[in-house]
Amino acid sequence: MTKLRVGLMFGGRSGEHEVSIRSAQAIALALSAEQNASKYEVLPFYIQKDGRWIAGEEPQKVLGSGIPSELESQASTLNAQHQISLLQSPSPVAEVDVWFPILHGPNGEDGTIQGLLTLMQVPFVGSGVLGSAMGMDKIAMKMAFAQAGLPQVKYMAVNRSQIWSNPCIFPKLCDEIEASLGYPCFVKPANLGSSVGIAKVRSRSELESALDNAASYDRRIVVETGVVARELECAVLGNDQPKASVLGEITYKSDFYDYETKYTDGKADLLIPAKVPDTVTHQIQEMALQAFAAVDAAGLARVDFFYVEATGEVFINEINTMPGFTATSSMYPLLWAHSGVPFPELVDRLIQLALSRNAGSGE
Image 1 (cartoon, helix red, strand yellow):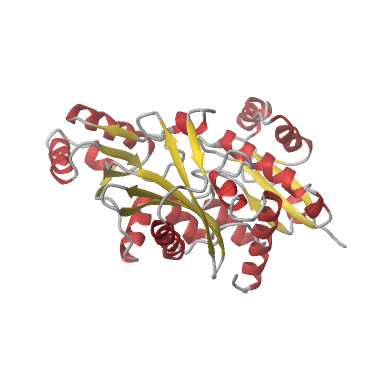
Image 2: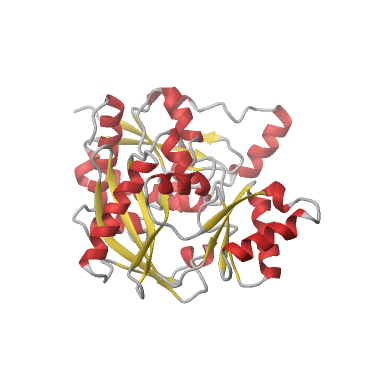
């Protein structure tokens, strides 16, 4: 039996570089599990923080250690001296049968890599250009959710030009946000993951500072009204006929689910399955599938919700088309493990979904 060569692409040019390495480690281990070892051969491709693609021994070292490559500074110096193009891909690229781009954040799950892989005409795990781009941009995402009739908390879309404007425009913008959304509210860059650049604000001075900070990350910013709610998540698996997992709940003691809370051991707890009424579970599962279709996602996604227990209301928060993928600490694979799909089987199914989508069949 000829093994399928899986191009495991990880690292990337985003603030989630280290998270991507941890996800890739887990996937590589799953592909070497007994039920997968006879089917797949892993070809690791490490994208350094400067954008260079590396194949061969160095990616294996990074997967083994979990630490970003020490070649970063050397590569940057080499580029400066010899003007080597970052777009030159290593020769093993042509050997790949199916890609698993486990890249998080900008330049990874925003449609850019997906466009490149589409041009290569080789199947890949996850959403295509449209689903990835809409899943990354919170404003486009919210517009798609609204069109699908999915309930959301009240929000405003803001441009960097409104924030970094003349002294007359910015105060009026803050006045409008205060009048429309009130406090507390959340300020978020539209195109960053892992809570980077997000701030919870309770006053005019905090709002002004948060808007300025968010504008330093992205030219598109979203401001949302705050709600007192439980944070629930649902995993989706499939293409044209996707399935929804059991629900999970995130609990934490910090002010909100920021980057430090998300990636520091002991700062947050994942409760699976979430202890909510069956009616709420079914409602969220159905909404997750609707959100998946609304952005034209494929393969996998994690959909996040706010459950206002006092009123029984459920609001969709966002969809993540390439969620964290560590076997023991990431919500997406844990939700499927509790739904009867163990980690090695999950990785196998995602690859098969990529192949079937490329062949034009839906699952």
